[in-house]
Length: 485
Ligand SMILES: Cc1ncc(COP(=O)(O)O)c(C=O)c1O
Image 1 (spheres, rainbow, N blue to C red):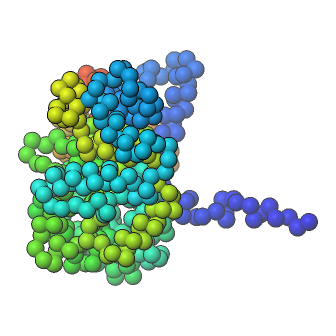
Image 2: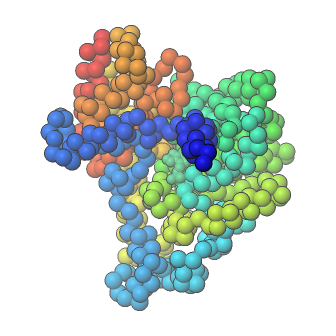
Image 3: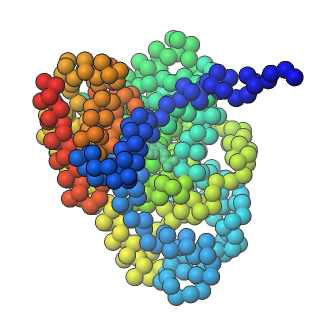
């Protein structure tokens, strides 16, 4: 018989786009952190710390953020409906659970409609209308997705019609985008965020990136904007958003507005404004700019990353495309139903009227505790980072991260080179060995040539533990720069 084994899936014949795709947030730093964790678990006391702190990823519950009691109790009732009839949970919780139970016909284990439960999409539309000052939202233009990621992937796959199609991505960016564009065999068209002005978007940078790509034969199809920013933590000015919309319309681009951090606002002076609101309020013809916007249960106050709930709203999108997207969604049947209910809990928090004083007050107290702690830590990290040797950090205005710039001496750069590492990865690995703190090197997000950064989250709880970690980090940083002076 002929030897067919070389036809079996191997590194050479597999989809090369998978090999090309990179995802730094779970990359080299995490591999090393896992090794250290294993050694610590075996009782090996060879590190100057006894715990690895996973600040590499925006995963709030992993770092001690508690889930919101109301949400979990309601979900428990849906998974075990007999709880609705007992007195284990407050009446206000059971009332909400009953509402869901009736709407899903008692069957959380059945597939829902492919775009997601209709009643949840209706509630999402109401949430969007309220958030955006009454601008109408259509439940038929909302999809419930497995976190924001699945919605983003779906839209990118629709946009990347062939290998010449390109997507404008911010640099630094959240690596889901570069990885998904690579998987779709599309072209990344990076545009730089301006660090000196707090990572704002500058129109000339957009125009330059677009024109250069077009000159090279790239068919630019869309621009991704992350607001508030990951990894950079900025909130966009409304005037900048208007400029982006004009630019997008005039260049024939769709906007992908990643707004998963819309509830994580720490700036005293800036507020979150959605792209939907900005687009809808623009004059003709700019108010016709096609927009896809994304939200998630993973961030905000819920931090329910593992439950995988999110939604996508499409606006000004061609009806035929809309139909095809719905068809595409049917291929995977539906997103998980627990995640869909979590989306409803995101957009439809308890009220005193519906759920009673006790439930309402507990929810508010838990929400305020999470938000006020994050806000304190956003201020603390900006201040502490700026007090460190050779570190410069823009204000963390929103989201869950800071992205400080680190200046390395020629000696440090040479030392990294000898170890075949980028200088920022070398620095982050050293930090991990000495403090147990897992950051991600700026290289993983993209940065201007010759500049170096790191990303860390502001999620360690409680505040004093976070402060201690920052102090430890400061000590490491200052020693590092002293050593490689
Ligand atoms: C900017 C941004 N978009 C999307 C996501 C994906 O979130 P999820 O799929 O969990 O909703 C993340 C996760 O960290 C993110 O930071």
